[in-house]
Amino acid sequence: MSSSKKPPGSAAPGEKSGKTPGKTPPDPVRRRRFLQKCLGALGSIGSLMAVYPLIRYIEPPPEAEGANRVEIDRASLPPGTSRTVIYRGRPTIVVNTSDGYIAYNAVCPHLGCVVKWEGGTQNLICPCHGGIFGTDGSVLGGPIPGPLTAVELSVTDDKIIVGV
Ligand code: FES
Image (cartoon, rainbow, N blue to C red; front, side):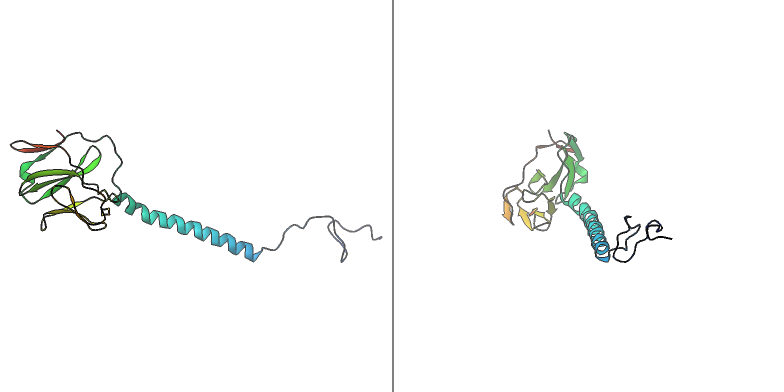
């Protein structure tokens, strides 16, 4: 048997066989980098899933078609209490103060949180950064750039009507 009659794929030491190897051993560094990228991607997705509900809570709903008129029974809003309704797609706070009814777009002009009525101090407060508004909508404290936006309101014998 001559040396030119070798089986396919065989080669003497230092000689190329002319055939590409079938399987190379896995590179542990490449595999580690791939796994790190996969874990990073999963971590990012998990973080977004955790933060999304928080963002949805803080961010008011986009301007949308909503009720152009909201009616509230006067009996359901005793003095010193408030109610938040959705008017024209935006949260709107209606308060029965000692001086009468007021209504404001409840979206804080700072970063858009929804303001609440605080009966004890008779102020509207923003829970996000401590913004404080008076019953006239003016800024009393906090990092707020401007007053609340008033919403039209009318009162009948038994109803409070937001959006005349
Ligand atoms: S969002 Fe209201 S004070 Fe910052």
